[in-house]
Each structure stands twice: as structure tokens, then as C-alpha cells.
Amino acid sequence: MNDPEGGRLRGLLRNPAAQHAGAILLYLAIWLVAVGPKILPHMSSWTLSSYPNEPSVFVWSLEWWAHPFSHGANPLLSSTVWAPTGLNLAWVATSPAPGLVAAPITIPFGPVVSFNVLSLVTPPLTAWTTYLLARHVTRVFPAALVGGYLFGFSPVVMREIELGHLNLSMLFLLPLAAYLVVRRLDGTIGPRAFVALLTALLVFEFGIFTEILATMTLVGLVVGAVAWLLASADLRRRLAGAAVLVAVSFAVAAALISPYLYTAFAHPQAVKPATFEGLAVGAKSTSDLTRYVLPRPGFAIGPGVRHRPDLNWWYFGVPLLLLLVLFWMEGWRTFAARLLGLGFLISLVLSIGSKLPGGGIPFPWAALEKLPLLDRARPGRIIAYAFLFAAISAAVWAAKGRTKTVGSVLRWLLVAAVDEPVPGRAVPRRDRDGRRQVRRRSALLAGGNRDVLPHGHLVLGLSAGELRGAEDGVPVGRGTGQAERPAGDPQVHLEPPSLGDPPAGRSRPRGRPARLDARRHSASDRRNDAAPGGKLRFVRRGVTMK
Figure 1 (cartoon, helix red, strand yellow):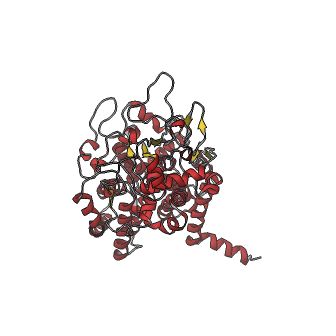
Figure 2 (cartoon, helix red, strand yellow):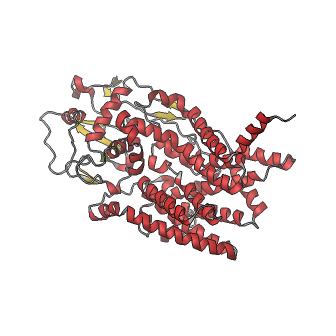
Figure 3 (tube, one colour):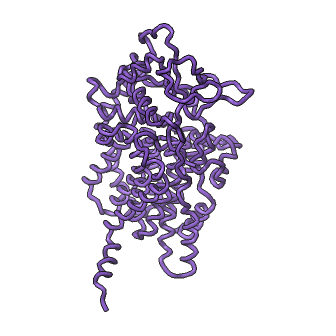
């Protein structure tokens, strides 16, 4: 007997639109199961991050960009940061594009809620745009789901979510740019639509983080050149036509963002001390190269304790690397396997940095880091493109396992070994006065200055009088012509939560403020419980993921 209901259901499951909707819902469900129980009840009082001092920049930025033209002047030139001197925000990672998009949430519910909403949608959205690319390339729904998961929940995305870096975690436009180019090459999108969509993508990426736009352009140029060398005569013609349209898109995008660029170069720039360390600047020793296969302690997006964990966001793992080797060996004669393999290796080489650890052999980045915009980029972050090439490679390889043979079963078993569950779970720090402290901190961020200390830590240095003024919306800060503090008004430092008192026998690093004795503050300023030893216990708000 025919089963019309079953036939309609099978037809619905094969429908591309239904598959796309199911994919985003699946990714969203995975992420909400991982972190939702701990953050959803505290959307306005906690931030989805293990380091609250890092998200504070973006919380401030979300509030600022919710009212971009209410300040009566160029929104890129703020006098409430480093008041009254001001700061050129064109050189600060304020991410205006997400701030403008989230304004309908920020205005009624506040910037903390907006930050959490953006953090909750970023990994699923990144996975979904990668799925779209993999689905178009493979035409196989389960394989595309694998590719989307591998990049959307990759260590490089999880690490930035844990640190609270909205600008670095929002990588969903990288696979979307490749998706548009692939569709243009196979003729499924017209030239006008391609230029319009790619221009919008470039402008939005510029509004998220200029470094990602710069490295995306670099990797796109290099991989595009490799594709032209590997391609047939017909594909070369299509690549040349697509390259012309890409150039037009960049030109139109440059015209649209020209007011931003003018502000950036016509006004004084913010100079950030060169204090970056770790994998962001590339591999510094041969032990860093072992991070590809060794997860290291603290890989599971945490723990968020006083001491920063050794987050290994270069970790691919043996199963994924084995899968990639099998894929390249099996399909090296095909254009797709060659391009994906070389793209992976190119991204890996660029991410290592200027020199090969150990031998000191100069690497390509030594020349590239002298170019405009790239001189501010951190090569270690280019590893994200290697994860993207790996994710698409895994999807293409998995798509070949469509039969009920032993080989297909083994293929999918390896895929299952690669697709580990989302590492970690959200564990909140338990503080008695978290909600009130968030309101107090938000007031400070809206009207106060931020002192940038060594190692990238942020400190709000305000007197008790300025603290009360900031809560009333009065701009305060340090700099030329700052208001004189009332006599006897002690300086109050809100210390970054990841910093604590140094261990016995060790002095505090220079530039980090010591915690103040609680007796120096009036009762109205003592809003947290005193910790043992007469020290103020500053609220550690945020969601620790471990």
C-alpha cells in the first residue's frame, strides 16, 4: 500500500529549505544544551564568558552603538572614554556592526542582555553558514551537518566565546564569503546579486573586526591564485570573471566605509602597547607545534579561575588530522581535494608567524606583516581558516560514505570520533550581589574611563565621588583637565576578576593595582562582602565554562 503521509514527510525531509531550517535549529539546540541552563536565567546579570573584564569592552560598545547619533557628534570620536581628552574609536575593537544590529535588544533590555544574545547565536550561526557552504559543495545533508559542526564549534570559536571576544568569535561571514564565490563560479547566482551580497558582507565584516577582513582578503587572494593555477581552461575563465566582480565589491565597500576610514586616519590613533603573547603571535617554540595533536590542560573552554588556563585553540586532534590525510590521499587527483589541502597548509604556515620555531627559518608572514592593516594583525589567529578548510574537507570526505558497505561504516565511525561533543559546560561563579554589581558596573562603563594596563587587563580607576557620579550618568575619567577629586576621597579600583592577590613570596606585577583595605571606604561604597583579611571581595560575574 502507498503511504501518502510518509511520502509527504520524506519529501519534506529532502526539501533544501527544510534541511536548512533543521540545521540551524540543531546547532542552536546543541549550544543551548551546553550553556543555556546556566546563562538563560541570568541574561541581564551575567555574561557568557569566563573573564568578565574582557566582555566589559563590548558591553560598553553595545550601549554606545545603540544610540550612535544621540551624542551630538561623530560617534567614532568619544569624549566619555579617557574623558575629557577623548578617544578615536575607529581604532578600537568596538564592533559597530553587531552593536547596531543588537540595538533593538540593547535599548529595552540593556547591553548585558545583548552581549549574551550575540554570544548565544554566534557559534550556531557560524556552524550554519559553514553548513550552507558544505551543503552546496557536497549536496549531502548529513555530511554538511558534520562540516558545519566542526567549524562552528571548533576550538578557535570556543576560545573566543570563553574570553568574551565578540569580534573574534563572529566568524560566520568567512564561510559565507566562500559560499557566494562558489555559487558565482557554478552560475547559480547572477553578477548583480553577487556584487550586492558580497559588498554587504565586506561592509559588515569591517564593522565586526578589521583584522578578520584583512586576513580574509589575504587568504582569499592566495587561495584564489592557487585555484587559478590548478584549474582547467574553462574554470580559469570563470575564476577571472569572479575575480573582477570581487574587485568591484571591494571598491564599492571601500566607498561605503570611507567616512569611517577618514575618521581613522584624520584623527589621532589609539596606540596599544605590544604586549600580546601566546599563540596569537604565532608559534614561538617547537612545543607550540605539538598543540595540533595534544589538547593540553584547560582546553575545554575553561576553567575560569584566578589563573588563566592554557587554552589550546590550535588543537585539531589525531582523528581529524587522520581524516584529512585519508581525504587528500584518496582524492588528490581532484581539483577540490587539492585546493582544500593546499588551503589548509597555507593557513597553517601563515599562522605559525614570521619564523619557523627552532630553526629560525623565515616564513611568509615576515614579509606580509609589513603591509598596511596586516601590520596590526596577529598571525596565530589565521589558524581559523585552517579549521574552515578542514571542516569542508571532512564534509566532502564524509559525503562519499553513502553506501551500506564496511568502508562507509568505518568512514562514519572516524567522522564520529572527530565530532566530539561541545567541550565544557557552563558553571557560574556564585556571588551574592551579582545583579546589583552588574548595574553598578554598567553605569561605570557608560560614563567612565578605562585604564589599559599591561597584558591587556582592564581596570576602572575611579574615586568614590566619581563612582557615585558615574552611577548618575556623569562622564568621568583621567586626562588633561580632569576634575579635581574632593579631599580625602580615596581611589577605588575595580580589579579584573582573573587577577588576585599574588602567591606568598611573590610581588604583584608592576601596573596591577593592589586590592584596597575595606576600612578605607564608607559604608555606602562597601557593596560587596569583605573577604577574609579585610580585603574587598569584588564580584566575579560571568559564566565559567569548564
